Amino acid sequence: MAEVLTILEGYFKTFAVPSTIGQKEDYGDLDVVVAVDDNEAVLAALKDIELEFKSKEVYHNGPVHSFEFREFQVDLILVPRAEYLMHLNYLSYGDLGGMVGRFANKQGMKFGGSGLQLQIRTDSRDPTTTHTLLHLSQDFHAILDFLGFDSKRFHNGFECELDVFEFVSTSRLFAPSLFLSLNHDYRRRSVKRPMFIRFMKYLEERGLLSVPNDDEEPLEAVDDGVQHGERGLTLLGEQALIVFNKQDAFNELAEARAKNDREKSLVKRVVPYCTGRGLSGKRLGTFLETVRHSEVAMKSLQAAADAEEAVQVGGTGACHHSVVGDENPFDKAVKKLLSELL
Picture 1 (tube, helix red, strand yellow):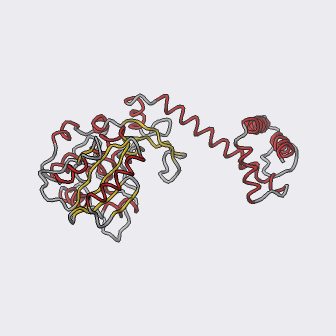
Picture 2 (tube, rainbow, N blue to C red):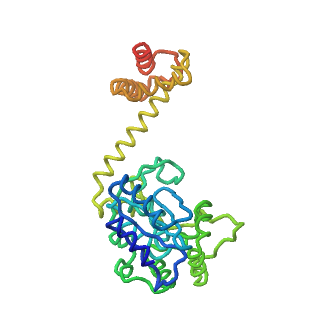
Picture 3 (cartoon, rainbow, N blue to C red):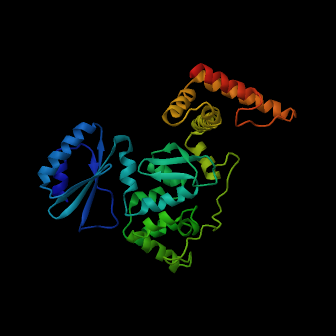
């Protein structure tokens, strides 16, 4: 390992190997996190490293660049400098980062090398709906404390896997369902990780959960105690906005998302009018994009939709029109757009 790091010193200013459990002496492979600023310079460096390593094989998978050096694998993980410490800590101590991520995931957040992010979903209680991410923090130790872990204990390191397992299971937010009610894809990926399998065994031996067999469905209906606030976020998600001072950013993002959803809905209502005029395929798509990106057009459609709703609320018996028929505010607005833009 020392020889690899010595070679890398000639190419990179900031890099390190993630911390390992205990004193690991034998390396079947070596992960090295590298802070990068200039992508072009890095690409040139990678070519030189390949030659200096005399690598027989080279693989590139996103930010991970894998080389062979004297019959063992070296993975260079290239990350933006601002995320360097976050990635380095996240990848330390085996699968600990992924285990911590389960706590965040259950609370409507995402935890990884880029930090802690809040998922703002179309339907906050449905994990299958699309979401927008609000960045909360890249301070690894502050994130650990927030998620109920002892960041000082992490800083001191772990001598064995049992220490890691105790660290995870003593979080104030720990619940067996975090590691039992896994969706199929997550469970399939996780059980391929030996450390994760041993952690599940650790929990099972202590009577904290009963692990499903491989051919059994995961238990999705377990009560995990997660509570939701008024805005659809979990209570911990609401606290995160306060702790990390992101309330204004959340409101701006939520407003922008709501605006985007309204505009999509309005444009969707325009489609039947267009097909009635013979628009289809690429021509239809181009027209809808023109409408969507026209501030004047969108304001006109929104005003018409508001007027239509006001008539309905007023009890006149007017109904929603999705095709051209009796004149109503939305009919008029769309016809005007068609005459102006076509």
